[in-house]
Amino acid sequence: MTEALPTILLVDDEEHSLASMRMALEDEFECLTAPNAEVAMQYMEENFVQAIFCDQRMPGRSGVEFLTEVRDRWPDTVRIIITGYTETNDIIAAINEAGIYQFLTKPWHPDHLVMSAKNATDLFRLTREHDQMALEMRFLTRTVESKVEEQRKTLREGLGFENVLRAPNSPLNSVVAQARQFASFDVAVLIQGEAGTDKSALARAMHYSSLRSDRRYVEVNCSGVDDDLLEIELFGAKRGSVQGRQTQKVGVLRKADKGTVFLRGVADLSPRMQRVMARFATEGTFRPIGASELETSDVRLMASAHSDLSVDVAEGRFRSDLYYALSKTTLTTPPLRARKDDLSVLAQNFLFDAAAKHGKPIHGLSDDALRFLARYDWPGNLRELENEMVRMLIFSQDSILGPELISRHILQANPQTPGDNAVDQVLVSDGTLKERVEQIEMRILRETLTRLKWNKSRAANELGLSRVGLRAKIDRYGIAETGKTDSPEPEED
Image (tube, rainbow, N blue to C red; front, side, top):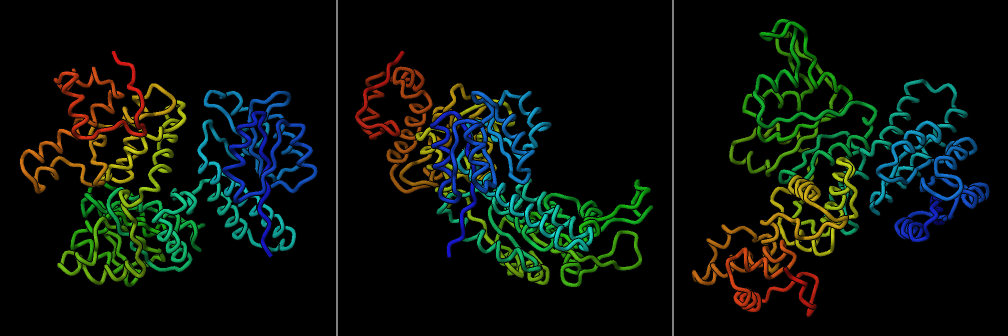
């Protein structure tokens, strides 16, 4: 018997907005749509609604007024309001009057909408389970109640696997599936992958899906940190044992007892720190600086490395006992160049986050911009992509961001051989001098034309060519405007 889908009520006076929300959600939820508060109230009385997405500005009763009545009559229904960037007074009123769970700003992204709906229905279910336990098992201790509350808080903060954004056919799906399996087993995990592949997000998700989710999760950066400072941070120090410090320092391994510690960049540990960490990883004991006796701590260790640690072990750069203690299970995060299907989701997400942070409303990236971004191999992975989205947002003048805003080195990436976009690659490649010069010339031409929105007069002037000469080179290299074929030339200065 198929389990019934959760029911969600969508309220908006604009028909196209309702249709867009339904399209994004209908595969995983039973969607009811209402054009105003009156019709929505009828649906509430006739259906078992778990969550509501309601527009703020509607004729008649506003979203806040409608959701305030819903809170009084159906307090368990999770209430989400959709609002614009400038409605500060409405937001404050919603917090005070309607008990809003979450705000979605326009324009919303379909993946954000689905994620919010999943969190909302999970919160509804968890709230009902909590209320049922309170009625049936009144003798439960406050410790158990606190754990349930912590789980509810985790859902609100979105620290689980739903926070690991990816496309439906993403190569990251298999990694997430393994991580879900590993999460419930109390063993050490080693996460390997290039810098910037967001290994921390995977570690956090595993912690908040584990039996230790109600205890502390602490990240410690092992790269570029002095041994003495790192040892104090991890193990702590007794009063007076460190020059300049007169108070006792409690280390991370003590603070996170019963919880999880994530060691970032563990391959950069010095031989001395590898030795002391190996003792803790294998025996669970450590000695604070200045202490005469060993202490114990029940901590689940997770660690990350930018390279294959087994190679470092084989070449004598990393202790084998520490490696095997940390790698009870291993995960490998793919680089962004191997996640081309995810690039649109990730780029738009970074862009909307930056827009919300800086208060600059936009509607997203153009298809042409996404095509150019997909040609680049992103050696800096997610960090580089996030930086590029911030840069494009800063220079944007329109609500849809086009390819002319993209950095020049990305525009010059070779579409025929993704990943081979550096001039250095051309310089050391096979071929005659003329052939290699032509490769560079073609990339410069394509980048300049794209950046100048295919205004050939301006491009010819910038490149020091005649307009006839530019036309000849375009024909020679077969350069075409992205997304257009046999279209009229744009009007030029």
